[in-house]
Amino acid sequence: MLGRVFKAYDVRGTYPDLLTDQMAWQIGFGSSQFLLSDAAADGDTTPMMKNIVVGRDMRLSSPTLVERLIKGINDQGGFVIDLGLCDTPMIYFAINYYDCAGGVMVTASHNPPQYNGFKISKRKAKPAGESTGLGLIRKHAAMVDRTKATAPSLPTAGRSEKRDLWDKYANHVLSFCDLDGKNLKVVVDASNGMAGTMSPKIFGKNGENVEGLEIIELNYDNSKGEFVHEPNPLVASNLVQLQEEVIKNNADLGICFDGDADRCVVVDEKGQIVGCDHLTAVMAPYFLKEDPGSAIVYDLRSSKAVEEEIVKAGGIPIKGRVGHVFMKQELAEEKGIFGGELSGHFYFRDNFNADSGAIAMVAVLSMLAKSGKKMSELIAPVARYAQSGEINFENEEKDEAIAALIEEIGPGSEIDADIEELDGVTLDCFEREGWWCNIRKSNTEPLLRLNAEAKDPETLAKTLAMIEPMLGVKVAH
Image (cartoon, rainbow, N blue to C red; front, side, top):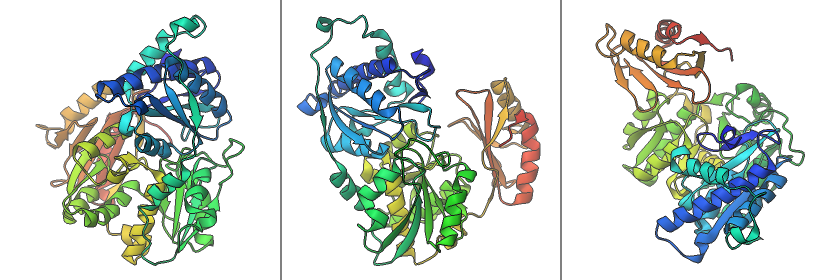
């Protein structure tokens, strides 16, 4: 059963049919076993290396799951610092602030209310993915059975204590904020998620803690564990309410957070959705002014404009694989200052290379204030190419389809597109024919995911007409 809830980057499933209280105890036990041994393997045996920070979101199942999780950690011998209700990025901050072995956030992010899960991070807030710890945690969890374990067979029990870290966390987030004496009005849609707790704690009611900032609060109530709209800002229909409120209130910007507030999407002053790659493109020069010549990491599905803007600003463009595990690793290895992903995750060197929705918000506001321009004016020059967005195709023979596609238009074919296999397959004819595309396989479904871009809409239409028939049956949005 455990195998059904362990995913590539986290643990997730419907509660209580797939994800159970017993599993929460097992996962706590397995997480403690892995995190404590991983920290010891790093050569650090300080007392804090027995500590694991734990937090939870507002889902109705979270209090029970976090209780069982903590019991499992304690039974294995780990000590718990319980942060209570918090956003996921606070876990990353707490791991580093307390310099402890790792952390676990009880959340199902953007999934519907009946879901829940666990996001597990190692020391220094490094992510635990399938190949970087999650696989071992699953193995440890599967091998322990509390119903058969007797007290003498368990290690010395750990302890748990509650701590309030909001003031320190708020100071950290606001260290990224500089409105340059300007006044900004922003509509913030918390999606009935953890941004509804995080935002008042950091920015104050309606932004009163930050001089020059006015926040119009939308969907901040998270007490019922229910959502007015799905807490996924990547779905355009979930942004309609925000778009309407931005226009109605003549706001400078709109921000929509996901359920655990580690991702966000921006809406400009005209109510238009800003692509996360375009946002990365305009944020890159802002960060490069702080550290000229630094690396900027970006999602390989991003517009060509991202790479072009980074180079133009004197930075080093680093193309990264999709997923926070890979983006954080690239940012750390390349000593980059900033990174952006199409999913709405934004990463910051000075935030332990981790992502943060709150820091993304204040960084965007600070960039906007210093630019003296409207958001639409900043975005227009970088949104210069035609994009398909992600298109999914049903295909039971994914590898065969990709191989046929490469043979048809890849190196040595009549089209002779350049090929890159960093993540899926990228076929690039941008310089010669004015287009490029990336095709990735879904890890869990019989789907191929296509992202294409061209220098103009006509070229994009021709490219899609050529490629789509080779990928399978298009899935309706």
